[in-house]
Length: 401
Ligand SMILES: [Mg+2]
Image (tube, protein in one colour):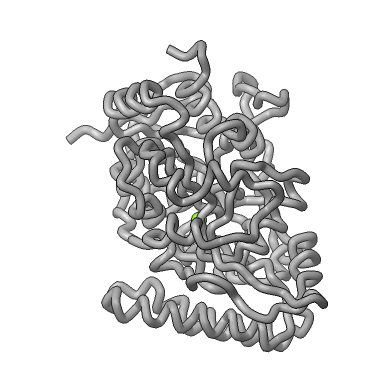
């Protein structure tokens, strides 16, 4: 069977791709100490520094963040200092469009497996209108970049540094033990789920025992290698009036909110974080976690229920727009993820129409086949959010066709 085309956003040209083995990783990880949101994103192998040439002459650029040693240190704060910049970050062509704010954007290749089906979904969502629509987004490597100034970006969990470094070492030790388990295909899911609960529980315990303070979170974010994709602000702004955005993560809500504060410098009333949430005492010391434990293997099924149970949130969230009952009535969904397992983020919703967008940031040749079968739209090579902004504007702008 012929492979579907790759459509180049910049010029509309079409080319074929020679795909390699399929990556069948099923779940979105976070790893309690994960560098890039899941273990697949942390491997130091399989990411050559040279462009990979496809069978039909298409060139898929695959870049390395640095040496293998540097990549192996992605889970550590030292990443910024050891990462070797081997490429320019300005991979832009003359004819690439600009963002709404006038800034340049990265325009990468986009793969649409079934354009006709996508067109039908867009028509259905447009017809139902914005009151039936919501966005569910993964955080790490979906809203945030995979590469940051040539360095591998840190996840919201990995960037955290406790004042007592002894506890950072202890969390690293847990990572080294449990991380291989998370992706061991020989371990049954039920058994693995218990082990993930064990891992997350121990990690959260170390954060409390080690005396984590909110100041440490603030300082960790300030020095972290993390950045949002270009276009995230435009996306949130476009949706802010009447469309909720649930950011769902197996990481830590308090850190994600601090990243939003420091990197975006503003809040959005339609954005709500659904993740593990900390409780601090009057002195800013972590004393407990609230709500259900969300780990890499259960984050999807609990998404909407967790959203209803959270009372602390970022800024002036419109609870009327985002409360659980309202969200469940919004049966048309735009799902954003960077991992095959992220497709399950909408499992808790009996949706009518879903458009799924996958960001395939690395290991493209091995994973593209599964991504294009799973997601309606796949953006390659750490793309910007410009295509998603364009999509929602086509769905709900009065002038759209
Ligand atoms: Mg992710």
